[in-house]
Length: 290
Length: 292
Image (cartoon, rainbow over all chains, first blue to last red; front, side):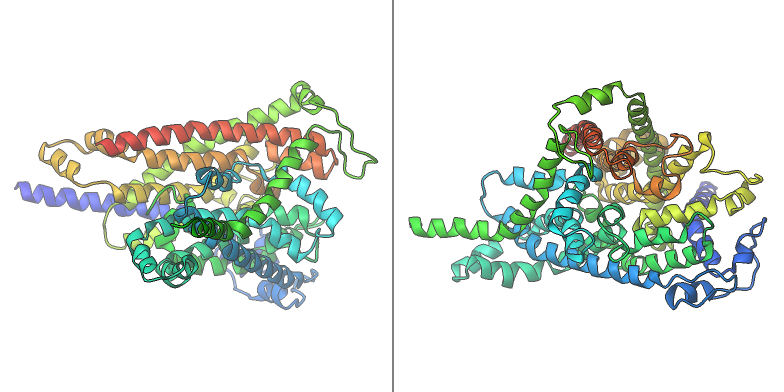
Protein backbone atom coordinates (compact mmCIF):
# COMPACT_ATOMS: atom_id res chain seq x y z
CA UNK A 1 0.00 0.00 0.00
CA UNK A 2 2.63 2.47 1.06
CA UNK A 3 4.86 1.50 -1.85
CA UNK A 4 1.98 2.23 -4.21
CA UNK A 5 1.50 5.65 -2.70
CA UNK A 6 5.22 6.26 -2.94
CA UNK A 7 5.16 5.25 -6.60
CA UNK A 8 2.25 7.60 -7.23
CA UNK A 9 4.15 10.35 -5.41
CA UNK A 10 7.23 9.89 -7.51
CA UNK A 11 5.16 9.90 -10.70
CA UNK A 12 3.49 13.21 -9.77
CA UNK A 13 6.85 14.57 -8.78
CA UNK A 14 8.29 13.67 -12.14
CA UNK A 15 5.33 15.14 -13.97
CA UNK A 16 5.77 18.39 -12.04
CA UNK A 17 9.47 18.49 -12.84
CA UNK A 18 8.82 17.96 -16.52
CA UNK A 19 6.11 20.60 -16.52
CA UNK A 20 8.49 23.05 -14.87
CA UNK A 21 11.27 22.27 -17.31
CA UNK A 22 8.88 22.69 -20.23
CA UNK A 23 7.74 26.13 -19.04
CA UNK A 24 11.31 27.24 -18.44
CA UNK A 25 12.59 26.09 -21.83
CA UNK A 26 9.58 27.61 -23.57
CA UNK A 27 10.34 30.99 -21.99
CA UNK A 28 14.00 30.75 -22.92
CA UNK A 29 13.61 29.47 -26.46
CA UNK A 30 10.28 30.79 -27.76
CA UNK A 31 11.70 34.26 -28.58
CA UNK A 32 14.49 32.70 -30.65
CA UNK A 33 12.06 30.41 -32.46
CA UNK A 34 9.70 33.30 -33.13
CA UNK A 35 12.47 35.46 -34.60
CA UNK A 36 13.52 32.50 -36.73
CA UNK A 37 9.96 32.32 -38.06
CA UNK A 38 9.95 36.07 -38.72
CA UNK A 39 13.18 35.71 -40.67
CA UNK A 40 11.32 33.38 -43.03
CA UNK A 41 8.41 35.76 -43.57
CA UNK A 42 7.75 38.35 -46.22
CA UNK A 43 7.29 41.92 -45.03
CA UNK A 44 3.58 41.62 -45.75
CA UNK A 45 3.28 38.70 -43.36
CA UNK A 46 5.36 40.47 -40.72
CA UNK A 47 3.34 43.67 -40.56
CA UNK A 48 0.02 41.85 -40.54
CA UNK A 49 -2.00 43.31 -37.67
CA UNK A 50 -2.51 39.83 -36.21
CA UNK A 51 0.80 37.89 -36.12
CA UNK A 52 0.59 34.98 -38.52
CA UNK A 53 1.60 31.54 -37.37
CA UNK A 54 0.82 29.92 -40.71
CA UNK A 55 2.57 31.45 -43.71
CA UNK A 56 4.57 30.51 -46.77
CA UNK A 57 8.24 30.52 -45.75
CA UNK A 58 10.69 32.40 -47.93
CA UNK A 59 14.45 32.80 -47.94
CA UNK A 60 14.23 36.32 -49.42
CA UNK A 61 15.46 37.98 -46.20
CA UNK A 62 18.55 35.80 -46.06
CA UNK A 63 19.19 36.41 -49.75
CA UNK A 64 18.86 40.14 -49.22
CA UNK A 65 21.38 40.33 -46.38
CA UNK A 66 23.86 37.83 -47.77
CA UNK A 67 23.93 38.54 -51.50
CA UNK A 68 21.94 41.73 -51.69
CA UNK A 69 19.04 40.75 -53.90
CA UNK A 70 16.21 43.25 -53.80
CA UNK A 71 13.43 41.92 -51.66
CA UNK A 72 9.87 41.59 -52.94
CA UNK A 73 8.75 44.74 -51.12
CA UNK A 74 11.27 46.80 -53.09
CA UNK A 75 13.35 47.87 -50.10
CA UNK A 76 17.00 48.45 -50.70
CA UNK A 77 19.04 45.40 -49.90
CA UNK A 78 21.78 45.52 -47.31
CA UNK A 79 24.81 43.59 -48.46
CA UNK A 80 26.84 45.60 -45.90
CA UNK A 81 25.81 42.91 -43.48
CA UNK A 82 28.46 40.59 -44.93
CA UNK A 83 31.02 43.35 -44.53
CA UNK A 84 30.10 43.87 -40.87
CA UNK A 85 30.15 40.14 -40.27
CA UNK A 86 33.68 39.90 -41.66
CA UNK A 87 34.69 42.92 -39.56
CA UNK A 88 33.52 41.09 -36.46
CA UNK A 89 35.43 38.02 -37.53
CA UNK A 90 38.67 39.98 -38.07
CA UNK A 91 38.43 42.05 -34.90
CA UNK A 92 37.34 39.19 -32.67
CA UNK A 93 39.89 36.63 -33.89
CA UNK A 94 42.64 39.25 -33.81
CA UNK A 95 41.76 40.28 -30.29
CA UNK A 96 41.64 36.70 -29.00
CA UNK A 97 44.94 35.86 -30.70
CA UNK A 98 46.75 38.87 -29.21
CA UNK A 99 45.28 38.13 -25.79
CA UNK A 100 46.37 34.51 -25.95
CA UNK A 101 49.93 35.37 -26.95
CA UNK A 102 50.28 37.98 -24.23
CA UNK A 103 47.95 36.53 -21.62
CA UNK A 104 48.80 32.85 -21.40
CA UNK A 105 52.48 33.31 -20.41
CA UNK A 106 51.40 36.01 -17.96
CA UNK A 107 48.79 33.69 -16.49
CA UNK A 108 51.43 31.01 -16.06
CA UNK A 109 53.78 33.45 -14.35
CA UNK A 110 51.01 34.63 -12.01
CA UNK A 111 50.23 31.02 -11.14
CA UNK A 112 53.78 29.80 -10.60
CA UNK A 113 56.42 32.47 -10.03
CA UNK A 114 56.99 34.37 -6.86
CA UNK A 115 56.31 37.87 -8.04
CA UNK A 116 56.04 40.93 -5.88
CA UNK A 117 52.51 42.33 -5.71
CA UNK A 118 51.26 39.23 -7.52
CA UNK A 119 47.78 39.46 -6.05
CA UNK A 120 47.60 43.18 -6.81
CA UNK A 121 48.49 42.58 -10.43
CA UNK A 122 45.93 39.82 -10.71
CA UNK A 123 43.30 42.00 -9.08
CA UNK A 124 44.05 44.86 -11.46
CA UNK A 125 43.02 42.63 -14.32
CA UNK A 126 39.78 41.76 -12.60
CA UNK A 127 39.00 45.35 -11.65
CA UNK A 128 38.69 46.32 -15.31
CA UNK A 129 35.32 44.67 -15.06
CA UNK A 130 34.17 47.22 -12.49
CA UNK A 131 34.83 50.21 -14.73
CA UNK A 132 31.94 51.58 -16.77
CA UNK A 133 32.92 51.27 -20.43
CA UNK A 134 32.20 54.91 -21.23
CA UNK A 135 34.75 55.99 -18.60
CA UNK A 136 37.49 54.22 -20.54
CA UNK A 137 36.18 54.88 -24.01
CA UNK A 138 36.26 58.67 -23.82
CA UNK A 139 40.03 58.94 -23.24
CA UNK A 140 40.66 56.12 -25.71
CA UNK A 141 38.58 57.99 -28.26
CA UNK A 142 40.71 61.09 -27.76
CA UNK A 143 43.95 59.12 -27.99
CA UNK A 144 42.79 57.19 -31.06
CA UNK A 145 41.84 60.40 -32.81
CA UNK A 146 45.33 61.81 -32.35
CA UNK A 147 47.17 58.57 -33.17
CA UNK A 148 45.08 57.72 -36.22
CA UNK A 149 43.78 54.51 -34.63
CA UNK A 150 40.14 55.61 -34.79
CA UNK A 151 38.15 53.41 -37.18
CA UNK A 152 41.00 50.97 -37.82
CA UNK A 153 41.19 47.21 -37.24
CA UNK A 154 44.37 47.63 -35.17
CA UNK A 155 42.65 50.14 -32.92
CA UNK A 156 39.66 47.86 -32.52
CA UNK A 157 41.79 44.81 -31.74
CA UNK A 158 43.69 46.81 -29.12
CA UNK A 159 40.58 48.14 -27.38
CA UNK A 160 39.01 44.68 -27.38
CA UNK A 161 41.89 43.62 -25.13
CA UNK A 162 39.79 45.14 -22.36
CA UNK A 163 37.32 42.34 -22.92
CA UNK A 164 39.56 39.40 -23.75
CA UNK A 165 42.82 39.90 -21.84
CA UNK A 166 41.48 39.96 -18.25
CA UNK A 167 39.28 36.96 -18.99
CA UNK A 168 42.12 34.92 -20.48
CA UNK A 169 44.65 35.78 -17.79
CA UNK A 170 42.22 35.17 -14.97
CA UNK A 171 40.93 31.85 -16.27
CA UNK A 172 44.23 30.44 -17.48
CA UNK A 173 45.82 31.25 -14.15
CA UNK A 174 43.26 28.95 -12.55
CA UNK A 175 43.98 26.14 -14.99
CA UNK A 176 47.75 26.43 -14.45
CA UNK A 177 47.23 26.38 -10.69
CA UNK A 178 45.35 23.11 -11.08
CA UNK A 179 48.48 21.36 -12.40
CA UNK A 180 50.28 19.61 -9.55
CA UNK A 181 53.62 21.32 -8.95
CA UNK A 182 55.37 17.98 -8.52
CA UNK A 183 55.18 17.39 -12.29
CA UNK A 184 57.10 20.58 -12.93
CA UNK A 185 59.61 19.90 -10.19
CA UNK A 186 60.43 16.55 -11.77
CA UNK A 187 60.98 18.24 -15.12
CA UNK A 188 63.23 20.86 -13.53
CA UNK A 189 65.39 18.13 -12.03
CA UNK A 190 65.71 16.72 -15.56
CA UNK A 191 67.24 20.05 -16.57
CA UNK A 192 64.31 21.63 -18.39
CA UNK A 193 64.32 25.42 -18.44
CA UNK A 194 61.33 27.33 -17.12
CA UNK A 195 60.21 28.20 -20.61
CA UNK A 196 60.58 24.61 -21.82
CA UNK A 197 58.50 23.42 -18.87
CA UNK A 198 55.86 25.97 -19.73
CA UNK A 199 55.79 25.06 -23.43
CA UNK A 200 56.35 21.31 -23.41
CA UNK A 201 54.69 20.24 -20.18
CA UNK A 202 52.18 22.78 -18.90
CA UNK A 203 50.64 23.98 -22.15
CA UNK A 204 49.69 20.46 -23.33
CA UNK A 205 48.16 19.79 -19.90
CA UNK A 206 45.87 22.82 -20.02
CA UNK A 207 44.85 22.35 -23.65
CA UNK A 208 41.14 21.71 -22.98
CA UNK A 209 40.99 24.69 -20.64
CA UNK A 210 42.87 26.79 -23.14
CA UNK A 211 40.50 25.90 -25.96
CA UNK A 212 37.40 26.65 -23.94
CA UNK A 213 38.86 29.89 -22.62
CA UNK A 214 39.69 31.03 -26.14
CA UNK A 215 36.18 30.20 -27.29
CA UNK A 216 34.62 32.03 -24.39
CA UNK A 217 36.80 35.07 -25.01
CA UNK A 218 35.74 34.91 -28.64
CA UNK A 219 32.07 34.91 -27.67
CA UNK A 220 32.49 37.81 -25.23
CA UNK A 221 34.32 39.84 -27.85
CA UNK A 222 31.85 38.89 -30.57
CA UNK A 223 29.00 40.10 -28.37
CA UNK A 224 30.60 43.45 -27.61
CA UNK A 225 28.79 46.50 -28.86
CA UNK A 226 29.92 49.71 -27.23
CA UNK A 227 33.56 49.76 -28.37
CA UNK A 228 32.61 49.41 -32.01
CA UNK A 229 29.83 51.96 -31.65
CA UNK A 230 32.16 54.69 -30.41
CA UNK A 231 35.55 53.84 -31.86
CA UNK A 232 34.55 52.60 -35.30
CA UNK A 233 32.71 53.82 -38.36
CA UNK A 234 31.17 52.12 -41.39
CA UNK A 235 34.49 50.59 -42.46
CA UNK A 236 35.16 48.79 -39.16
CA UNK A 237 31.76 48.44 -37.47
CA UNK A 238 31.32 44.97 -35.98
CA UNK A 239 28.11 43.15 -36.78
CA UNK A 240 26.50 44.11 -33.47
CA UNK A 241 26.67 47.79 -34.42
CA UNK A 242 25.97 47.21 -38.10
CA UNK A 243 22.74 45.54 -37.06
CA UNK A 244 21.28 48.91 -36.07
CA UNK A 245 21.45 49.87 -39.75
CA UNK A 246 18.25 47.92 -40.29
CA UNK A 247 16.48 50.60 -38.30
CA UNK A 248 16.14 53.95 -40.04
CA UNK A 249 13.86 56.92 -39.54
CA UNK A 250 11.54 55.83 -42.33
CA UNK A 251 11.18 52.17 -41.57
CA UNK A 252 12.50 49.10 -39.84
CA UNK A 253 13.44 46.14 -42.00
CA UNK A 254 12.15 43.61 -39.49
CA UNK A 255 12.54 40.56 -41.73
CA UNK A 256 16.12 41.28 -42.68
CA UNK A 257 16.98 42.22 -39.12
CA UNK A 258 15.60 38.87 -37.96
CA UNK A 259 17.55 36.99 -40.62
CA UNK A 260 20.73 38.88 -39.75
CA UNK A 261 20.20 38.08 -36.04
CA UNK A 262 19.93 34.40 -36.85
CA UNK A 263 23.12 34.39 -38.94
CA UNK A 264 24.99 36.31 -36.22
CA UNK A 265 24.04 34.02 -33.34
CA UNK A 266 24.32 30.74 -35.24
CA UNK A 267 28.11 30.25 -34.75
CA UNK A 268 27.76 31.01 -31.07
CA UNK A 269 24.91 28.60 -30.53
CA UNK A 270 26.87 25.78 -32.16
CA UNK A 271 30.02 26.60 -30.18
CA UNK A 272 28.19 27.08 -26.89
CA UNK A 273 26.80 23.58 -26.94
CA UNK A 274 30.32 22.17 -27.11
CA UNK A 275 32.00 24.11 -24.31
CA UNK A 276 29.22 23.69 -21.80
CA UNK A 277 31.45 21.84 -19.38
CA UNK A 278 33.83 24.79 -19.06
CA UNK A 279 31.21 27.47 -19.13
CA UNK A 280 30.71 27.88 -15.40
CA UNK A 281 34.28 28.72 -14.65
CA UNK A 282 34.44 31.07 -17.60
CA UNK A 283 31.32 33.00 -16.79
CA UNK A 284 32.28 33.54 -13.17
CA UNK A 285 35.89 34.49 -13.93
CA UNK A 286 36.99 31.35 -12.14
CA UNK A 287 35.14 32.25 -8.95
CA UNK A 288 33.17 29.02 -9.33
CA UNK A 289 35.16 25.96 -10.37
CA UNK A 290 32.66 23.76 -12.13
CA UNK B 1 71.26 28.94 -5.82
CA UNK B 2 74.00 31.27 -7.09
CA UNK B 3 73.05 34.93 -7.24
CA UNK B 4 73.36 35.09 -10.99
CA UNK B 5 70.92 32.23 -11.46
CA UNK B 6 68.45 33.76 -9.07
CA UNK B 7 68.63 36.98 -11.03
CA UNK B 8 68.03 35.09 -14.25
CA UNK B 9 65.06 33.28 -12.75
CA UNK B 10 63.55 36.58 -11.67
CA UNK B 11 64.18 38.13 -15.08
CA UNK B 12 62.53 35.13 -16.71
CA UNK B 13 59.44 35.60 -14.60
CA UNK B 14 59.12 39.19 -15.76
CA UNK B 15 59.64 38.15 -19.38
CA UNK B 16 56.57 35.95 -19.08
CA UNK B 17 54.57 38.92 -17.89
CA UNK B 18 56.07 41.56 -20.16
CA UNK B 19 53.68 41.44 -23.13
CA UNK B 20 50.62 41.46 -20.90
CA UNK B 21 52.17 44.18 -18.76
CA UNK B 22 52.70 46.40 -21.79
CA UNK B 23 49.10 45.92 -22.86
CA UNK B 24 47.99 46.63 -19.32
CA UNK B 25 49.91 49.88 -19.19
CA UNK B 26 48.23 50.73 -22.48
CA UNK B 27 44.89 50.05 -20.84
CA UNK B 28 45.72 51.80 -17.56
CA UNK B 29 46.82 55.01 -19.25
CA UNK B 30 43.31 55.86 -20.50
CA UNK B 31 42.00 55.03 -17.02
CA UNK B 32 44.23 57.67 -15.50
CA UNK B 33 43.40 60.07 -18.28
CA UNK B 34 39.70 59.64 -17.53
CA UNK B 35 40.27 60.81 -13.97
CA UNK B 36 42.20 63.83 -15.23
CA UNK B 37 39.64 64.78 -17.88
CA UNK B 38 36.87 64.63 -15.28
CA UNK B 39 38.63 67.57 -13.61
CA UNK B 40 38.65 69.64 -16.79
CA UNK B 41 36.14 71.45 -18.98
CA UNK B 42 37.18 69.25 -21.90
CA UNK B 43 34.77 69.44 -24.82
CA UNK B 44 35.22 67.48 -28.01
CA UNK B 45 36.29 69.92 -30.72
CA UNK B 46 36.76 72.64 -28.13
CA UNK B 47 39.69 75.04 -28.45
CA UNK B 48 41.54 74.22 -25.25
CA UNK B 49 41.33 72.08 -22.14
CA UNK B 50 41.13 73.99 -18.87
CA UNK B 51 41.57 72.55 -15.40
CA UNK B 52 38.45 73.26 -13.35
CA UNK B 53 39.05 71.12 -10.26
CA UNK B 54 35.96 69.42 -8.89
CA UNK B 55 33.57 71.76 -10.65
CA UNK B 56 32.11 68.93 -12.79
CA UNK B 57 31.35 66.95 -9.64
CA UNK B 58 29.77 69.94 -7.91
CA UNK B 59 27.65 70.56 -11.01
CA UNK B 60 26.50 66.95 -10.92
CA UNK B 61 25.41 67.33 -7.30
CA UNK B 62 23.15 70.19 -8.34
CA UNK B 63 21.87 68.42 -11.44
CA UNK B 64 18.47 66.86 -10.71
CA UNK B 65 18.62 64.74 -13.88
CA UNK B 66 21.85 63.14 -12.67
CA UNK B 67 20.29 62.19 -9.34
CA UNK B 68 17.30 60.79 -11.17
CA UNK B 69 19.54 58.69 -13.43
CA UNK B 70 21.53 57.44 -10.44
CA UNK B 71 18.35 56.53 -8.59
CA UNK B 72 16.97 54.81 -11.69
CA UNK B 73 20.20 52.84 -12.17
CA UNK B 74 20.41 51.62 -8.57
CA UNK B 75 16.69 50.81 -8.46
CA UNK B 76 16.93 48.96 -11.76
CA UNK B 77 19.88 46.93 -10.46
CA UNK B 78 18.05 46.01 -7.27
CA UNK B 79 14.99 44.88 -9.25
CA UNK B 80 17.16 42.90 -11.68
CA UNK B 81 18.88 41.16 -8.76
CA UNK B 82 15.65 40.14 -7.08
CA UNK B 83 14.03 38.88 -10.30
CA UNK B 84 17.07 37.11 -11.69
CA UNK B 85 18.29 35.50 -8.48
CA UNK B 86 14.73 34.35 -7.72
CA UNK B 87 14.07 32.90 -11.16
CA UNK B 88 17.63 31.62 -11.43
CA UNK B 89 17.38 29.72 -8.15
CA UNK B 90 14.11 28.08 -9.19
CA UNK B 91 15.58 27.20 -12.57
CA UNK B 92 18.72 25.71 -11.05
CA UNK B 93 16.72 23.62 -8.55
CA UNK B 94 14.59 22.36 -11.42
CA UNK B 95 17.58 21.45 -13.56
CA UNK B 96 19.23 19.73 -10.61
CA UNK B 97 16.74 16.84 -10.88
CA UNK B 98 18.31 13.92 -12.67
CA UNK B 99 15.39 13.03 -14.91
CA UNK B 100 15.70 11.77 -18.46
CA UNK B 101 16.48 14.54 -20.95
CA UNK B 102 17.61 17.03 -18.31
CA UNK B 103 21.06 17.16 -19.88
CA UNK B 104 19.58 18.58 -23.08
CA UNK B 105 17.65 21.14 -21.07
CA UNK B 106 20.85 22.19 -19.30
CA UNK B 107 22.47 22.81 -22.69
CA UNK B 108 19.54 24.69 -24.19
CA UNK B 109 18.99 27.05 -21.27
CA UNK B 110 22.26 28.87 -21.94
CA UNK B 111 21.36 29.95 -25.48
CA UNK B 112 20.00 33.40 -24.55
CA UNK B 113 23.21 34.06 -22.65
CA UNK B 114 25.42 33.29 -25.62
CA UNK B 115 24.04 35.83 -28.06
CA UNK B 116 25.00 39.51 -28.22
CA UNK B 117 22.75 41.49 -25.83
CA UNK B 118 22.12 44.00 -28.60
CA UNK B 119 20.69 41.28 -30.81
CA UNK B 120 18.61 39.87 -27.99
CA UNK B 121 17.29 43.40 -27.45
CA UNK B 122 16.45 43.84 -31.14
CA UNK B 123 14.70 40.48 -31.16
CA UNK B 124 12.58 41.55 -28.22
CA UNK B 125 11.93 44.87 -29.91
CA UNK B 126 10.27 42.90 -32.70
CA UNK B 127 8.36 40.78 -30.18
CA UNK B 128 7.24 43.83 -28.16
CA UNK B 129 6.32 45.94 -31.19
CA UNK B 130 2.77 47.35 -31.18
CA UNK B 131 1.79 44.73 -33.80
CA UNK B 132 4.06 42.10 -32.29
CA UNK B 133 3.38 38.66 -30.93
CA UNK B 134 3.47 39.74 -27.28
CA UNK B 135 0.43 41.97 -27.68
CA UNK B 136 -1.37 39.21 -29.55
CA UNK B 137 -0.66 36.78 -26.70
CA UNK B 138 -1.54 39.29 -23.99
CA UNK B 139 -4.71 40.37 -25.78
CA UNK B 140 -3.55 43.97 -26.00
CA UNK B 141 -4.23 46.21 -29.00
CA UNK B 142 -1.22 48.09 -30.36
CA UNK B 143 0.30 48.66 -26.93
CA UNK B 144 3.80 50.07 -27.15
CA UNK B 145 5.76 48.25 -24.45
CA UNK B 146 8.98 50.13 -25.03
CA UNK B 147 7.37 53.41 -26.02
CA UNK B 148 5.24 54.04 -22.94
CA UNK B 149 6.75 55.84 -19.96
CA UNK B 150 5.51 53.43 -17.31
CA UNK B 151 6.31 50.20 -19.10
CA UNK B 152 9.59 50.97 -20.88
CA UNK B 153 11.95 50.25 -17.98
CA UNK B 154 10.08 47.12 -16.86
CA UNK B 155 10.23 45.94 -20.49
CA UNK B 156 13.98 46.44 -20.50
CA UNK B 157 14.12 44.51 -17.24
CA UNK B 158 12.25 41.66 -18.94
CA UNK B 159 14.79 41.60 -21.78
CA UNK B 160 17.69 41.80 -19.33
CA UNK B 161 16.25 38.95 -17.26
CA UNK B 162 15.66 36.83 -20.35
CA UNK B 163 19.35 37.16 -21.21
CA UNK B 164 20.90 36.89 -17.76
CA UNK B 165 18.70 34.57 -15.70
CA UNK B 166 20.47 31.68 -17.48
CA UNK B 167 23.74 33.09 -16.12
CA UNK B 168 22.41 32.77 -12.56
CA UNK B 169 21.09 29.30 -13.38
CA UNK B 170 24.48 28.15 -14.68
CA UNK B 171 26.33 29.37 -11.58
CA UNK B 172 23.79 28.04 -9.07
CA UNK B 173 23.46 24.71 -10.85
CA UNK B 174 27.23 24.26 -10.63
CA UNK B 175 26.88 25.08 -6.93
CA UNK B 176 24.12 22.54 -6.40
CA UNK B 177 26.09 19.82 -8.21
CA UNK B 178 29.10 20.43 -5.97
CA UNK B 179 27.28 20.11 -2.64
CA UNK B 180 28.32 17.17 -0.44
CA UNK B 181 25.73 14.37 -0.28
CA UNK B 182 26.25 13.11 3.29
CA UNK B 183 24.24 15.80 5.10
CA UNK B 184 21.30 15.05 2.80
CA UNK B 185 21.33 11.35 3.57
CA UNK B 186 21.40 12.12 7.27
CA UNK B 187 18.54 14.60 6.96
CA UNK B 188 16.47 12.13 4.96
CA UNK B 189 17.00 9.44 7.57
CA UNK B 190 15.78 11.90 10.17
CA UNK B 191 12.64 12.38 8.06
CA UNK B 192 13.11 16.09 7.36
CA UNK B 193 10.62 17.64 4.95
CA UNK B 194 11.77 18.87 1.56
CA UNK B 195 11.23 22.50 2.58
CA UNK B 196 13.14 21.96 5.81
CA UNK B 197 16.06 20.38 3.96
CA UNK B 198 16.11 23.21 1.44
CA UNK B 199 16.06 25.92 4.10
CA UNK B 200 18.45 24.34 6.56
CA UNK B 201 20.85 22.54 4.23
CA UNK B 202 20.76 23.62 0.59
CA UNK B 203 20.36 27.35 1.04
CA UNK B 204 23.20 27.86 3.54
CA UNK B 205 25.58 25.74 1.48
CA UNK B 206 24.53 27.45 -1.76
CA UNK B 207 25.04 30.94 -0.36
CA UNK B 208 28.58 31.47 -1.72
CA UNK B 209 27.32 30.69 -5.21
CA UNK B 210 24.33 32.98 -4.84
CA UNK B 211 26.63 35.82 -3.81
CA UNK B 212 28.98 35.22 -6.75
CA UNK B 213 26.04 35.34 -9.15
CA UNK B 214 24.73 38.47 -7.40
CA UNK B 215 28.17 40.07 -7.60
CA UNK B 216 28.45 39.70 -11.35
CA UNK B 217 24.84 40.67 -11.97
CA UNK B 218 25.29 43.79 -9.84
CA UNK B 219 28.39 44.90 -11.73
CA UNK B 220 26.79 44.40 -15.12
CA UNK B 221 23.34 45.79 -14.29
CA UNK B 222 24.81 49.01 -12.95
CA UNK B 223 26.60 49.38 -16.27
CA UNK B 224 23.60 48.51 -18.49
CA UNK B 225 23.94 50.15 -21.87
CA UNK B 226 23.51 47.85 -24.88
CA UNK B 227 19.89 46.85 -24.32
CA UNK B 228 18.75 50.42 -23.68
CA UNK B 229 20.63 51.81 -26.66
CA UNK B 230 19.13 49.21 -28.99
CA UNK B 231 15.57 49.69 -27.75
CA UNK B 232 14.67 53.04 -26.19
CA UNK B 233 17.83 55.19 -26.19
CA UNK B 234 16.83 56.45 -22.76
CA UNK B 235 13.27 57.42 -23.66
CA UNK B 236 10.40 57.98 -23.64
CA UNK B 237 11.21 61.20 -21.80
CA UNK B 238 14.04 60.08 -19.57
CA UNK B 239 12.24 57.05 -18.19
CA UNK B 240 15.01 54.61 -19.17
CA UNK B 241 17.96 57.03 -18.91
CA UNK B 242 20.36 54.82 -16.96
CA UNK B 243 23.72 56.34 -16.05
CA UNK B 244 25.87 54.88 -18.80
CA UNK B 245 23.29 55.85 -21.43
CA UNK B 246 23.18 59.37 -20.03
CA UNK B 247 26.97 59.60 -20.09
CA UNK B 248 27.04 58.36 -23.67
CA UNK B 249 24.73 61.12 -24.83
CA UNK B 250 26.52 63.73 -22.74
CA UNK B 251 29.85 62.80 -24.30
CA UNK B 252 29.24 61.65 -27.84
CA UNK B 253 26.18 63.73 -28.66
CA UNK B 254 26.79 66.89 -26.64
CA UNK B 255 30.59 66.59 -26.54
CA UNK B 256 30.68 67.36 -22.85
CA UNK B 257 33.50 64.97 -22.01
CA UNK B 258 34.48 66.34 -18.59
CA UNK B 259 30.97 66.18 -17.22
CA UNK B 260 30.30 62.73 -18.68
CA UNK B 261 33.50 61.40 -17.11
CA UNK B 262 32.60 62.82 -13.72
CA UNK B 263 29.33 60.91 -14.02
CA UNK B 264 31.16 57.71 -14.95
CA UNK B 265 33.64 57.97 -12.10
CA UNK B 266 30.74 58.28 -9.68
CA UNK B 267 29.20 55.19 -11.26
CA UNK B 268 32.55 53.45 -10.98
CA UNK B 269 32.60 54.17 -7.25
CA UNK B 270 29.04 52.86 -6.93
CA UNK B 271 29.95 49.66 -8.79
CA UNK B 272 32.97 49.22 -6.59
CA UNK B 273 31.09 49.85 -3.35
CA UNK B 274 28.15 47.61 -4.23
CA UNK B 275 30.38 44.80 -5.45
CA UNK B 276 32.40 44.98 -2.22
CA UNK B 277 29.22 44.13 -0.31
CA UNK B 278 28.84 40.90 -2.26
CA UNK B 279 32.55 40.12 -2.18
CA UNK B 280 32.42 40.37 1.65
CA UNK B 281 29.26 38.26 1.85
CA UNK B 282 30.80 35.74 -0.49
CA UNK B 283 34.03 35.42 1.52
CA UNK B 284 32.10 35.10 4.76
CA UNK B 285 29.61 32.56 3.47
CA UNK B 286 32.20 30.42 1.72
CA UNK B 287 34.14 30.23 4.95
CA UNK B 288 31.13 29.14 6.95
CA UNK B 289 29.95 26.78 4.18
CA UNK B 290 33.35 25.10 4.22
CA UNK B 291 33.23 24.84 8.01
CA UNK B 292 30.22 22.54 7.73
